[in-house]
Image 1 (cartoon, helix red, strand yellow):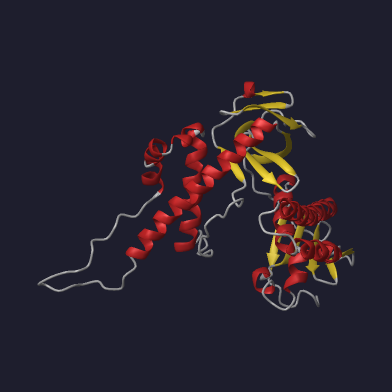
Image 2 (tube, rainbow, N blue to C red; image 1 turned 135 degrees about the horizontal axis):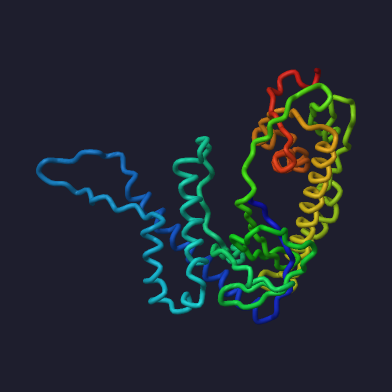
Length: 343
């Protein structure tokens, strides 16, 4: 079983400076490796598949840069730019892994064949997380402090204790609008992955119909009101964004205005996630089998109701509901949405 715990960090000024420098170096490495892949793609997507017997002006195809070739090339980056030697090697390799994942999702798609958009280069300040893929040993966690490679002891706000029996597999330090956070990926191999085997009866089954007037209505005629967190914050966001547009680019006041806007958006996202978690737990406390509509949320998010659909956050709610149901031994079933609102 694998779970993730997130804690707020209390970093010193030296640690903040170090992590910000590493984020900038990782951002540059990400853009460089993505450029290598785009150069290969541009030079090898010619439609001509044959040439003249006498002469050929077509250049030979270039080798495709993959995860292993780019990882081997990191030694050249360290020799040309000695500042990369300060980064943990596995953290730098994680940058290559991110490039591999986003580029292949664009070319080939995921396991279901769904392709993502063309990968974009990371602008300054757009690279927000550092991953430490090496498993962290138990002796590296001492009370509220955790030992990170080449950084040292980092203080965490341990608002809930780490569960017994779980090992820390990876750690990710993330920069958000309101501070620094660390996400610990915990694993316990002694807990088997068991699919929920629940016998569906009328007593333990409930169906939910999601909408925009009410967030959801159950088959027992229980209604959950939609909170509309973004709609309520829209007036404040409009004022803050108007203030931001008047600030001079590159000034300190503009940076402060950007931070105020980002904090407001983060608060809305946190409120929405908190509402989704509480609603999911409320449903699972009532029944063991939950049926919901298999909606085309991406398609609805491109319609004239895009703002309301995005504000409701149905996709995030269903993901949370499935995760909580799996850990509780319950079952979540997606059904055809045709006629579900009437029946």
